[in-house]
Structures are given as structure tokens and as C-alpha cells.
Image (cartoon, rainbow, N blue to C red; front, side, top):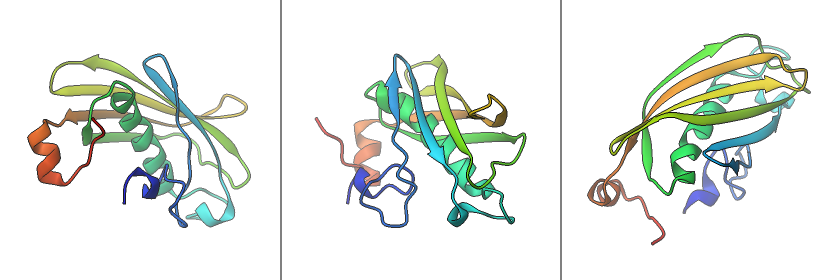
Length: 140
């Protein structure tokens, strides 16, 4: 099983969110439509879904840079709930890049431009040895 089964972006995971991230320079973005199956409270998207989408956006930034990373730290600020039927845009971009760590900021905004949530992440760059120890297959 590879990326096709990722809970957030994999198209072969029958329980996944199937978000499609697109590159725009150093940034990435995706759209997501909240359905009833994504709720926590009635009519409100579960915070874990929001968190997973923001984490995935942060992970796609270094992936877009041909780097393999893991999330070392993720801080999320929830602003206003995502409602069932609402479509949001998730965007992320690097704020600092060095050999071992990439700092990323991400936002989730609805179609009216209202900020729903934001995140700051520390993405740890994995060496080939670390990737192999984790069983991560990379395309060479």
C-alpha cells in the first residue's frame, strides 16, 4: 500500500477524504466539501477532519520540494466551525527551510473568505536511513 491509501489524499481508501492537493510554486492548495459523514457536533465538521486536512497540506509543501518529512509538531487554531455543505480551500506554504526542518503555515478558508482554521507545522526532513527504518518507500 502506498500513497493511494492515505486517509486524506488517497483515492483508493474507501473511508478517506480524497482531497487533491495542487502545487502553486512553493505553496499547495486543495478544496474540500464538508458532508454529513464528516461531522462531530450536529452540522459541524469534526475537528479531527479539519486537523487532518491542515496536516496533509503542511506535508505536501516539502513533498512538493521532493523531500520526505514527518510532522514533528502541529499547532492548530480553530476560528469558526466548518458547516455541513460548506466548501473550504486549504492552502499551505513554507515559512522557513533548512536542511533538517521545514516550517509551514496553512489556512482553511470558506468560499466567502472567512478563516475557519489555521496551522503552523514543523516538518522534519528524513534521511534515507530514517525513511528505510520507517518502511517508507520513495520513488527514485
